[in-house]
Length: 213
Image (cartoon, rainbow, N blue to C red; front, side, top):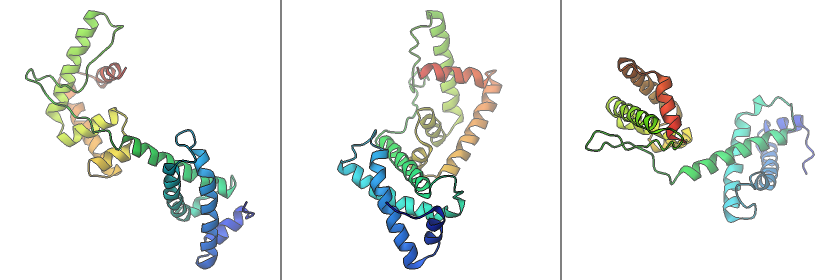
């Protein structure tokens, strides 16, 4: 177990040269030892997949530790702080891998101009409520199809379906900030169109909440 104090970690990692290299190697060993057990609920600590992921995350963590070294406030042990960075990176990568094979959702229109993205299987609603919600969904889908570009639709549906922002951005060939801008523009276009058709955002949100149940 490393005996460095918080101050010694900061000094060694900020020193450069052989002193920094030795500290990085020691920190890497600590991360490699502890990370598999921190994510044991998601991967078997002894599996080859965990070993490969740990190696990848350890390297990323070292880079982030150096990048954010001056933000360490000393409220915990330095190694605990670094370990939290590693765990966050590992969980982000696991989430990305989980979604990597899931296709981005999209919408298509049938001959009756009905978007086929999703239905409203609410078995607790009475027949009249089901018809009303189905009609509302058709109306919302039509507005989305008419107002948004293909890329905006895919972005919006990806977020509705729970895609991580980073993964949705990667699939759409953009970055997180550009995706935020795309979603902002899409919301403005939809808001204006909804207002013109006498619909409120709350009514639209209720439709998607029911559809997701």
